[in-house]
Length: 397
Image 1 (cartoon, rainbow, N blue to C red):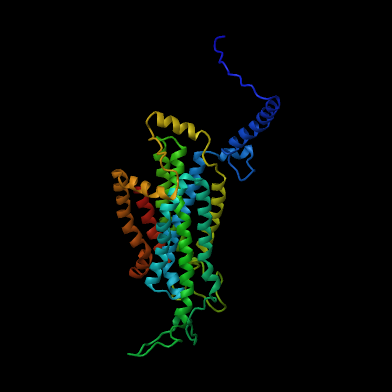
Image 2: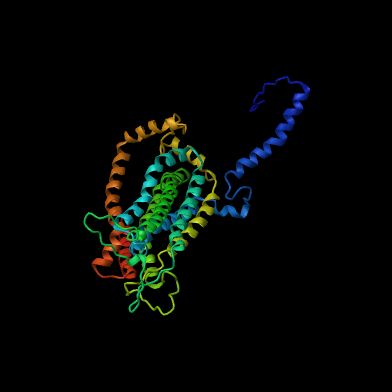
């Protein structure tokens, strides 16, 4: 018969026919249902049909754009504008402030190779979602010194207020420093340690955002649309620091560190004793990142139709074939790294980005403090001025 495909019959015992029939009837629908469920948006077994409107590359881009904006606002914007307030409140030196800012990059540098490599062979969504939760925890940890230290007491005129913040010490030649002289210094080391731990957590949690989120986008959109998606994603990350300056400056200007000032105290931001609510931005950022993590964890390992789209793009020559020699094991890290080092296009782009970020990272840490001291600006005006410059520069890039 035309179109008939001959099927070879295999003789099986009678009881085996029943077992095979039961297995086919009982398992096939479940396997098909499980496979379809893997491509649905939701959490655990909660994946209703009405929620699938979110299950698209555009919605994923929207969520990671918000996440990248909040992350860069916090780490590169709010932290930088807050450094003078931290210095005054916790009696930290410029070296201490530099250590706090650098801690974020230290953890990111140590983990980026492992996260990007193992994340490539694992579930990128879980890496990204759990990393975002770690970043949110880092934001909340950064606020701990504000909760642990005693309430801020400004030094007012006509008072004999003495505090560790205003304690001065004189070291005689050849003599040892007294314990009382450094009592405040030693206690403030605890707060410095907490700030550094918080920054380490934020750096570690952010690592999947800039390594695996672009990879997920690249795998789930058409190769011709991928540059647009990635451009929007990185534009949000570049604009974030400017928005952080714009948002953080007015908070330092308008909101007192304890929200309400003590009785009989009526300070304004023009008073040298004024310290703004530097911690408020981290609370808002931590909450925003927590909800972003929840939304991200709802996405499937790959979006519906992405595999077929990639296979077609490989056939048409728009994408290179996957290297099946690498299987995500520890010994594969060295060959994968060597493969990247031999790619001149990748290496020169990496060097260009590194050269550009060196100046921005070094100058951006203390530019808010320098601007306030050099031009006698309050934090609000300094933040708005610097934020405008950064946002305009980001738009130009």
